[in-house]
Length: 70
Image (tube, rainbow, N blue to C red; front, side):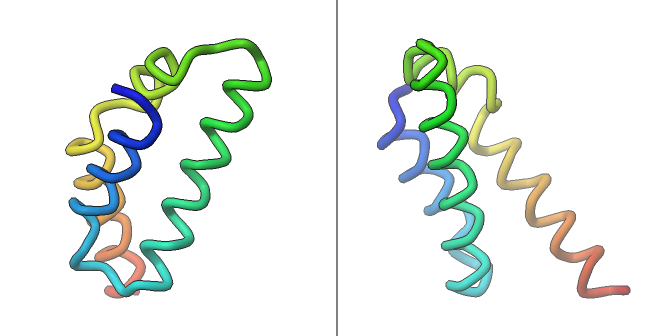
């Protein structure tokens, strides 16, 4: 999965979060790709290392709920 596909899928899966939170998260993941590319890794390698977007989104949503509960 390339960078665009990964970020598009992650953004779609996070659509229930507030827009500002979602934009911050996507920005963080764009930075992961930028750093990985600087180190000579391919977009596919980076996306694989970051994990499946579905699992990432689930974890982010769970963390967000915990923050709200506190």
